[in-house]
Length: 299
Image (cartoon, one colour):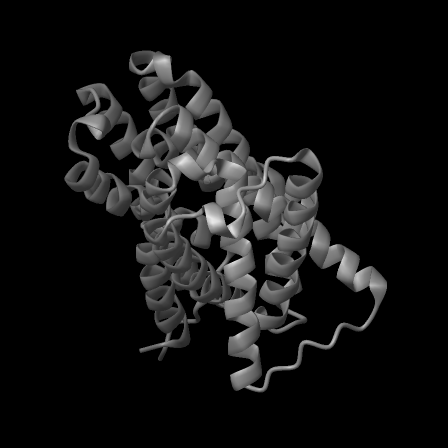
């Protein structure tokens, strides 16, 4: 197994875990989006800190400027999760996850601006396919327009912090990045919740909600976030984003099994979702052809 294939396998396992995020968000609906994200990042940062301690990874910060940079990314990540959970709350898991696949389109448009990389024609083509799928969904599920809007905002934020992290991970360990980004997000959200008087305190959370929060924080945040950042050393942000498009498949199937009628959608919705998710396989084809062209022929 090559280094590329190994990282791709790790990414797919991570995506399978990410696929449970929407399910946890639905199960924690009564807690509210802001509180859900807050407790997620608190538990997640503790988990990452514990991992760093046992693996003896340095978490020493070099400067206040560096900390501010990581904190800024942490704010984007928390905002992304907030809009994602809010999308689920005002629509459902299927709508939120199908729409957030537009992250690949935002990446295709933003990457040349941020990284000075040339615009790639097939990435724009895949982005157009994503838009077509989204138009089909919106045309037949317009009552969920607010959920689609929130998920689009979440997708844009995901594209921005993914591009920033793809640069940071070339210079810093993924555990180091994850700890300060998630930890900074926890402090910021705690500050917002406390002074807005919207915080749900520890004693007000049920045992079952703590179970979902623990799984969300430790598995879907600590482990999955470190892994998703680490693979960016080998895989491009666009490949990572499009692979994460498998997340709706896992979540939609699981959501249908758990929530049943609440997740049943029109035939047109599934057509649009399939169109969006198909970009994953088209990207794999284009990336494989691109690598073959770069590899010299053996004599």
